[in-house]
Image 1 (tube, rainbow, N blue to C red):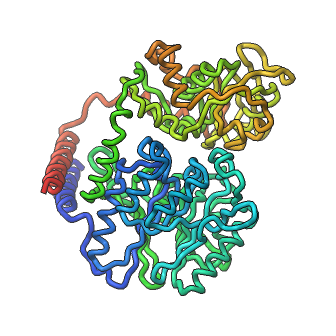
Image 2: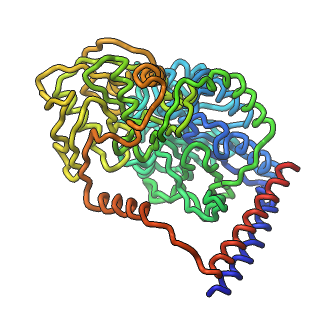
Image 3: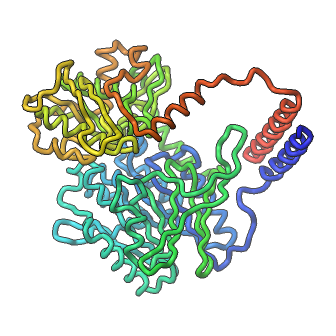
Length: 568
């Protein structure tokens, strides 16, 4: 067995050296073929993971091989980190223009500056903004529904969840036509086909999350006909199977990509999505009536786009680098935590809201917390990235009944992930996730049992205050005051109340909510805990050591060759 291990390791070393030495793209004649490169949910991660410079490198390489290349983005693009927020999306448009994007459909967060600003951005874009279901109150389309590029028709569609998944005021006076979106999409499909499209690609920001039912891509595809490919976003789903990984465990290839969904006529539609933040880049090759999906993971940057990003980052860097606080502990803002459970960063954030508003309690939606913070200095850029959406702290007068309704609503999807999950301060409660209703009990506010008939002051963000993430119970609450931006509240709280340092008080989530999970979820959580606490083996035998040593040497050699290729 050990001999086979050594043989396998040697073969692996040769294979890794050969693979790394190859160019990022296998040389092939793509003349007469159309290739779609697609991204989604970049959230302004311009240079994280693969980034926009790699999209450009792929585009140039494929065109050099004779392909007609369309570059599409499925939304949540213009907002997120300071490089986007400080220019209200213009820096992202400039970068996408440099890449050579063909079209995008707006996601819910692309409306974070309001519809009028999105229109302004589209006017300065060298690419098209497409969506078939956004209209004004009179039913007039805001953007084109679709467009034909060569013989490929591209039709856009945006999630009706935008009405509550951006600040509702951002889209006031506009509608996403949730009841007729399938009909509007079908009309747009028919129109691009009438204009000569042989292939129809739907570019959608719908997703496949359970909470997006009944507006998911998998809900809409069966209601229409004539679609060949659906490029999706919104749910941050990687529709592919992981293949090879590097020595650090990073995925460097995928063995398959995409899924098939039946349309109204029973025909297969290729559904693709790349996850988020540029972790992968999608590629769909159109060869006649054959559609092949891949997920690309090779990191090969275009120098011009890299330089453009560097220049834009340099312009805002002095403000981002200003240290405003420090933390002694790691603060957990991971999506899988803040959208399903209490988090220590959620505690800190809710405490900050309650502090600046001087309220009885605070509640903020977990989906609004976007990054974690590691121990050490905290800069303005860090604080902005925790709360990147430009929301403000609102102080409301609410009843105990409204607080209870908010907790029931916010936890209704648990243990599934939901952006509405409430991170709270001044509130404690129990959640029985095995029930389908009346799941919340034993609620306290300020240490006293909740009185449903009593009025309380509640700090929240302006998004949830006017019904965002479905918090409709707050719509009629009396607004008592507005207390600046959420990131500013974090700075103020840490500087003033915590004397500049987040200490061990926040080392763990403090236990505001006690959750009873359904049996499978509870067993999985216990198994993960046991695996984490299992001690590492005290040693390995010499055969295993030799095997590991050869693999390590192969990885090192591969890294050296990759470095020399980059320097060349």
